[in-house]
Length: 422
Image 1 (tube, rainbow, N blue to C red):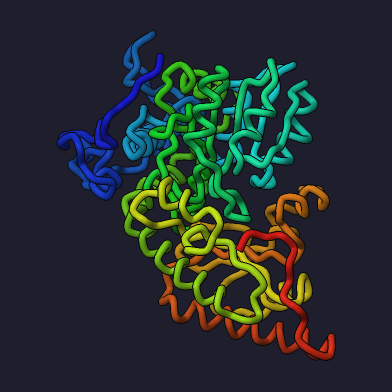
Image 2 (image 1 turned 120 degrees about the horizontal axis):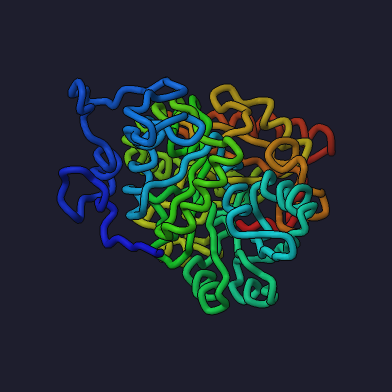
């Protein structure tokens, strides 16, 4: 059964319909503790629950199946998206795996965007393939490519927008329309933007997948993932698979994430403002070869970003290349003082990632180069520090890398042109 809700506040206890996103983030799915009146819901750190009688419980029996703290987070995430309560997992990849297993079986086929998280590429190519599930990667930024890749046995279209790490966008509504016409489910990894900036369910997709580890939790303290949908039968199947495979999120991680969600709209607004300022500064730097950020007016998909993203903001993640290629990029990454080199995004600190050796290390190099992930690409999760300090730190690191490159080559290198979207 498919259930739709007109307002993101549909699950807000005691609130009026039509509440805004910030109100929903703070109150959606949450109530004061009925036992003590505690404003912040207590964490239930218990593996098991006493039953009132044989066959009679208070809603929970064993925390591998369900847990009160996890249930609170699930109601909160569902409210934020105007959907049914989410199904939460120990990691984003566990949530994604459950979606694949819920919708695919041996002999089925899945179409995926060609620029996608490296863990997804590994999962599809090295795990699902051994279960008899075939896959096709296409440039989903052209919706007709998705239509052209469909087969009679296609059961799922899976995309990221913005894509990791090139920030390439997909017209989600166009792809959702293609899937609906063909009777194929459509799933979107909406981790980069969250429902604060982008609401794929409103654009017609069947299911959203999140790594809540990233912006949703926001403080780099709790790993988690979630599946959100308005299709009750699909969520029941996902929840059953979680029960069978044991991938539920731990109570402590859920409790931390619940509190992180409350500031998500405020944080994303500032992440986005800082990212745009940094993107403009990098774009103007003569030692930067290219910048990927759809908020830039000369980005080739800026119009789609303005139409698809809410509030005129575009998220806190960008990527760029410096003149001098891979050696220069490595020097930049090793020369920052404020920005931190980690395999992560969405925290309050500015975080740098080298996709080729980190998030996309398992992706074959030929595939990476075709889809615009060169060896010198740097991904930036722009934090909440004063943006002038972020810009100054990256510019000093770029200057160091440029000086070394100039010394090594006997002069400044030509601006790189490896086909990455500017």
